[in-house]
Every structure is written in structure tokens, then in C-alpha cells.
Image (cartoon, rainbow over all chains, first blue to last red; front, side, top):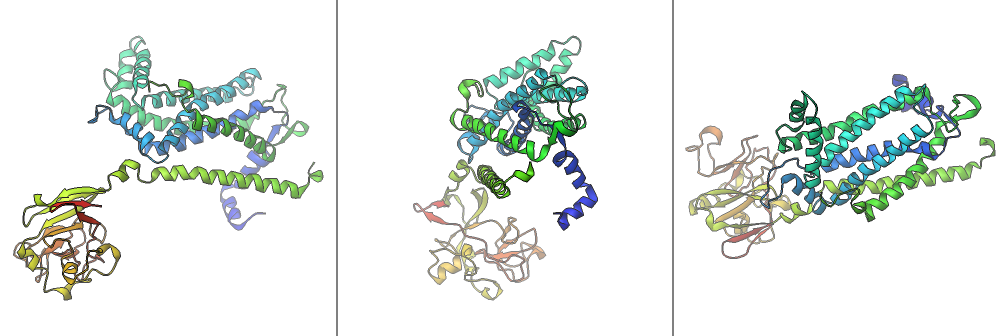
Amino acid sequence: MKTKLFGWIDERTGAEAIIKSQLTEYQVPKNLNYMWNFGSLALLVLVLQILTGIFLAMYYKPSAALTYGGYTVAFDSVERIMRDVNFGWLIRYMHAVGASAFFVVVYMHVGRGLYYGSFKGPRELLWIIGVVILLIMQGAAFFGYLLPWGQMSFWGATVITNLFGALPVIGDFLQQVLRGGFAVSDPTLNRFFSLHYLFPLLLAAIVGGHVHALHVVHSNNPTGLDVHEGKGTIPFHPYYTVKDAFGVGVFLTIYCYIVFFNPQMGGYFIEVDN
Amino acid sequence: MTDQADQSRRNFLYVAAGGMGAVAAGAAVVPFIGSMLPAADTLAASKTEFDVSTVEPGQLVVIQWQGKPVFVVNRTPEFLAQVDGHDDMLKDPNSEAIDEVSAEWMDTPEKRKYRSIKPEYLIVVASCTHLGCIPLFKPTKGRKDWGDSVPEDWPGGWHCPCHGSLYDISARVINGSPAPHNLHLMPYKYLSDTKVLIG
């Protein structure tokens, strides 16, 4: 089975042992229900967001300067993505719907953890890393929300940066650090774009830590009684790769329906003001 | 459990599912690569109109067409006379080497020589055919105005500052230049006596 190339890589990385311990011989409780699918779905959406985001960044321009038409460069560049860039509408809708889908999927993931007690020992650190991921996700989403530079973007950013201004003593300082000015303005837009690109990369790294922490303590299961070895468990591959793939199929069906037929979701996914 | 499994049926399902997944992934690549191609507004800007009467005799004007620089020269009778007499110095005096250096209106030896619809107005893509720099306009003969940046028998034309390619006053490349071809022509036509539509 082992090809020469794989043998060469294996000798230098120990790849075979990693694949065995993390995938083909990684033991997972055999009684997981479909609530355990949302972790892999969250990873899928993260990848989709990073991918679509890279392509959007090729055309998006983070500038509040006014154009001859009386709009702003940022808003016009989003308009251009929607009207002129090939498949730009598709990639932007994938990104915007993906942002909402990310939270739907992650809330299900968190809800599963709460309901089945996945936060309890020995999985405390796994849960804490998850909370950090959630906070960074919210930051990334908030920064992204400003980028179209529409009414909801602007006032959303104004309100949230004002929250920091309410802190005693350091409030004004923090607010100015966030805004780069005394109101949400061009420098704010620029730094939000920069951070909007940075945060998903942080996420990707921390998700790696989340998965590693999981593989140390292993998955919880619906009974709440730990079954690590032997009769109660089955290897992740092929059993849960196939089950996750099925979940991906169901998810993509719903996601594609929304992207293609109802991308604004009646104003819940993309507000008319934006 | 593995003992009871129908392996050929299982393999078929693996291949079928994997194949469908590969097709879907391949299809998903289309919009992403497609988005990197020129956008609709970029394509719409692919034609440029220019009034050649705004170019003074002897003057060179650089205009933009599809984001690329284009030379428009108003050649005086003096400049036009410089086109003759150095065919032996040229790599491709009749502009026949590749399609880009000729045009369908080049139907007479005269037009092949002047490389323009109206002899006085030369319109060529301003990118050196070596690696794309914009050559400098050095239209007068000899070294009087240009020093030793040009050869002693300089017929007048262009000198590329990047790697020293030389072109004559019809933008034909001179022997010994690193550039392989004459400066490219682009499709253009006269809409009226002086209005040119490039592209």
C-alpha cells in the first residue's frame, strides 16, 4: 500500500503514525447522534469563508473616499463585485450567507455541548478554547460587517465602538485606538479590513488547537459516560468520515438553496440597509 | 462486520460518491477562477477613441488603451524620409514575422514600410517586445541629440532604456536588439478624418 513517495515523507514526518492515531485508528464512541456533526460543518464553513474572502479581497477596496457618483469607494467596489465581476454576486452571497451559516452551525455545536455536558471534566480546556474561538469569530464577523460601508455597517460600528467608550478611565483611549479617529471614518474602515483578514487566520490556528485538545480527551457521547477503548468505540475513519460527509451534503443543500434562491433571507442575512 | 460486506458493491459506492464529490469540487472551481478574469467593466473599457489632430507635427503622445500605453506620433515629412535606406539594419523590415506586427490594411509595400493607415500618424503599442518597457522617443538622426546611447548610424526612432532595444521611426526593431519583434500594432480605424477608434 505504501508508495515510495509516501514512504519518503513518512520517514521524515512520521505521517503514517499521525494518520493512524488521528484518523484511521482514532477511537470515537459509536453512539454519537447527528448533533455531533456540527463540528465538522463549522470547519467546512470556516474554510468556505476564508476561500470566498480571499477572492472578494481581490476586488474589495477599503476606502471611505467619495467617488464622482457621490458614493464611497468601498460601497462602489462592493457594487462592482455584485454587477461587473464574473460570479462576484455568487462569491459575495456565499460569503454573506456563510457568515450567518457559521453562527447557526456554531450555535448548534455549542448547544450540543451544553445539553450533553461536553464542557465538564476532562473537557474543560476544550470548552475554554471553544469560547475563545467564538469570541474571535464574533470579532471577525463584526469587522466584516463594516466593510460594505452601508448605513447598517456604519451605525453598527459606531454603536459597538461606543460601547468601549463607556468603560471608565480607559474608555476614550480604547475608542480612539479602535477608530483611529474621533468617529468611525476612513482609518476605521482600513483597520477593520486588515483585522477582518487577520482574524480568520487566527481562527484556523486556534481551531487546530481545539481539535488537538479534543483528540487528547476524546469525544463525549449522548450517554455522558466516557467510553474510550474497546467495545464502545469505532475508528473515526471510515465510520465518522462518511457520517460527516453525509452531514456536509445536507448542509450544502440548504446552504446552496439560500445562496441561490434567497440570499438575503428576508433581511436576516443581508439587511436592506446594507 | 467486514466479512459480511459485499466488497464490489462497497467499492462501487466509494467510487461513485468520490466521483460525484470530485465533479462538484471541479464545478466549484469555475466561479472562483472565473472571478479572476477581467470584469465586465474592464472589458467594456477595451476600446478607446482619440483625435489625432491634437498631436502637433513631430510630437509623440502616449495614450491608454486597455490599460496599456499606446504611442501616437505625428510624423513630419522629415521623419517619414527617415523610414527609408536602412532595411539591411532591420530584423523584419516588412513586418511579416508574427500576426501582431502587421494588419489587414497593410496591402501595399508603402503601408508595410510606414506601418500606419495614414503615413503621418503612426499608432503602435508602446511596449517593447523584449520585456514590455516603454521605449524612449529619439526621433532625430545620428548621435547629435542623443550622444552614445544610440549607434553612430542611428536612423532615428525609439531606444528602450531597460535593455537597449532600438526601433526605427516606423517602430521596426533594429538588428542586435534583445527585442525579437517590431512594436505591435493594435486594431484601429478612422471614424472620421481625424477621429481614431482603437480596439
